[in-house]
Length: 546
Image (tube, rainbow, N blue to C red; front, side, top):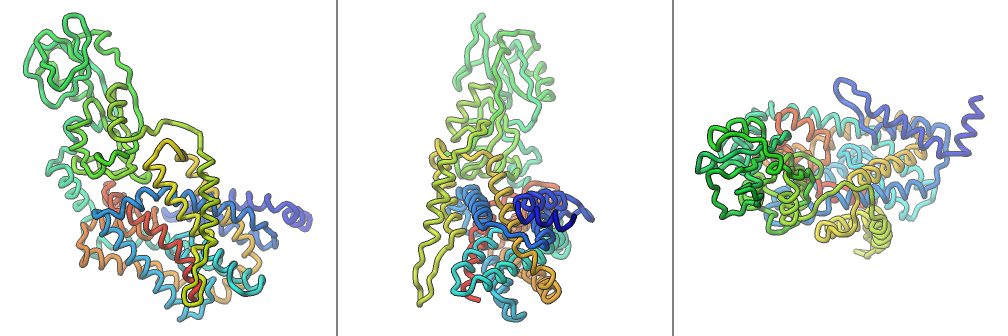
């Protein structure tokens, strides 16, 4: 019976691929002491176990899955990567470079110290610094080495095994690190986050720009004007005068007897009878079409301005519900600075919202359509770019297929931000490409490495684990000291930036919980973009220099 099942799996390896993904996702969601492995580590562990059946997996599936994953990563971080090259992003770039170079140097030293082969060192960095894409670039570099196919298979297996051993501490260890380090350094994270938010709010506990409301429950009411002048902090969306409905202009003077339509939250509107006049039931006055939409910031005149500035000049009738950057929510404060490709979720009357869209950039309207022309050409051009080899001191230097596709993704993501009429990849499709693409790749890697996994664990597992602990913590400690004493960054932004430089989103979430604030995300995005690019390239570098 068992022999028949194994033979079936060998004949149809796709069964085992999908089984590894299903088991891995389930294992990855199981929480132990409040921590879960995540899908990538879960799939790899499941694949290593199932790989004991000695399943042969076609490399085509692995390569296609990795190509989709790495292109989507580049596409996602492209706008932040190129935007970070501006003056205001230099500190964060420097921090990312310091963390990445410290990781590379530490990996090389540990590899020499423990006599690890080049595959193990590449996997060590991939897992300890939670950069799964470095597995792909390392395997691409191994494929170009002038060694036998059997030697390449051994190195590929060692990459996956070292990654599996070190990834768990690479994630869980840093979650604990970022929970403990504020206490060790005497930093009250909640107080610092609150202080930062108050500074960004103009020194007031009130965080709302004048014409924005953060309320998610908006109301629309009509009032007969019996008192003038009207309060300055209300939003009038329509005026009815002498039986005619007119749209308010900046120079419109409200007269007694006018009916005004006011938009706002309920608590604010209940007080207006004292400052405007009685509330009335006028269906014509309140007959407005509302709209809630995400707006991608592309206008170069808006980039670099604060929410308060945007609000006072262009936000009439628009109510901001949230602002996000690379899918991470940011604090809603007057002095929150807009970056290119930030997403503002705005509510209000259709007329006002569409006017705001025209100013800010591009409306992220719900769609299920993905521009597969962009995805296809992006991967083709990236592969061709990765094949280019430039000889340096007799050594052919190349990005490799993974690095080439990453660069292609960066460029296409940036072009999409400049010309939003092409290359649309909705967030759901991006998730499929990154998560499913990565885990198809990881499952294939794990199944191929499975037959050697137990032997490798017994011979070098302990050394790899302790080397991984050192490699996980050393770049963070050096980065922390560099950011604090050299760059003199705000502690909340510094810790957030370190999670980005190490591409550890789980640690960012832990920081936000500790701070009881989304403020750490302000420092996360630019280092995350650069960390993804630099650490991915390290996979190729390590294989070629070890």
